Length: 111
Length: 116
Image (cartoon, each protein chain N blue to C red):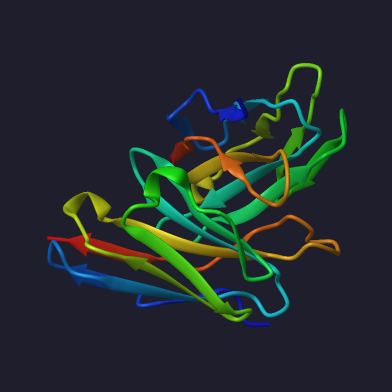
């Protein structure tokens, strides 16, 4: 069945180090992939979305590339900031407008 | 433009009570979603409406959870009767089906429910 997997539940980094959060998915449909970010006591907000194979998508210093061959959409940033500490959800949309969310990755950036 | 609004922001209920959560989607959005968010399960879809028609009702949540959308600008989620395991944040989201924000879901601030 359709599913999305985020392998890391918790990631702790030192400020300035690169960020990489993993996301893989499984579906028989052509699909949109998304990253949502949720800061403490706030609503989830869209960070990135893509439906184009092998095209890099960037926003607010983060980037991700959809690779349909490996069913992946990993989130990356070259240098973590304290303000990046948040919960990150990967999601995909196999049909209609329904999003299937991964289990989330809590990113903590320390000084 | 107003975003998604949800009321109340916090709700405390006794076990067995009926509670109703409210949501107003972004004006012009045709799709409305209800989610439950917990630390263990993450985001779980409860209901999905397209143009006021119920498209998905979240399977496992059918028995005590009922979402309704009586008009395009207002939706409710009723939990009856409440149980302590229902303690969670309930999020409402809406999305449009055209334009540059196609498929992007806009979330409300959520209602934090505590069932004693």
